Image (spheres, rainbow, N blue to C red):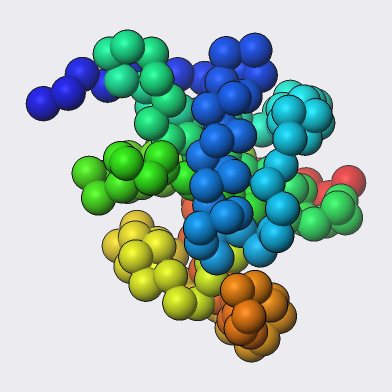
Length: 176
């Protein structure tokens, strides 16, 4: 078995690898509803937002230090009452898919959410992405909605499936 280890991703070390993984998803899939590949400037803003929000970026590297995949979460919506709800994302490098890394990264981000008193994790998944939906269901996520034809990419309408996992945190939620 290949040696792998967990890392906290940083801009300086991981931005190019994360950018490559995201751009592959943009160009070759409906995992992201973007049309154009992102650039290095976007990664600076992305990491700054994660840092300012206290949002984790967790990665798995191989023995050589190459990033194989990452998971993160961020604000679901910008209103204060949503402070206990996060939207997560998980991406695995194309040549590493099908090896269980997505499951490991999902489990890690769920654990991180619990540690930070997140109550609800939301996944917005292209409804045709059966693999991602099966992974979420395996981890206890429930289908909470379908938004038909909200995206258009590759010459066709895309449906967005919403999946949610409720956690038993925080112990004492507060307003404000």
